[in-house]
Image 1: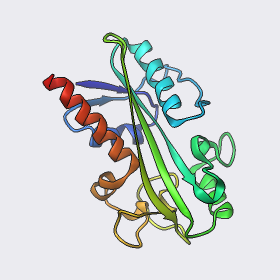
Image 2: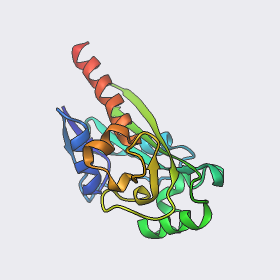
Image 3: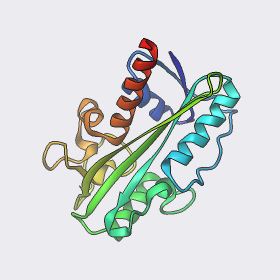
Length: 193
């Protein structure tokens, strides 16, 4: 099945292509405008983007919204993770702000919602998963992006940040990997059904 991913981020498209084995993940044309991520939940933001891409293409579209929640900050930055240090903040600026505001060792959760929209069949589904961990004392690792260099996952190899894991290790435990597996299992049921 061809799945149009509602993102202009090629890094994210490649990650989804790796996660959604057996499906062709297409990138969104630069001309397509996505709605602002102004929902109160990750699911709302993911559905908005998937609906916009499906409307534009007339076919099946998927989208994700993800971020990090820090217990010490009452769940912030949450849905504002990409804009935590400001509207056009870089990953590094967002990460530095989190490290300033949350204590090392405090509880974190990555959250990912993947929305599936099929406008022809009138089907919409959201798959939401989490990855729990804690904040590292220092930034480490060259892989991943965003908050990965300071996220020590509970399920990962002891003492390694997500940015130090191989793609296979990350995919096995990450919020996005878990949500993608939920989507894959559901798509397999539809194919068999």
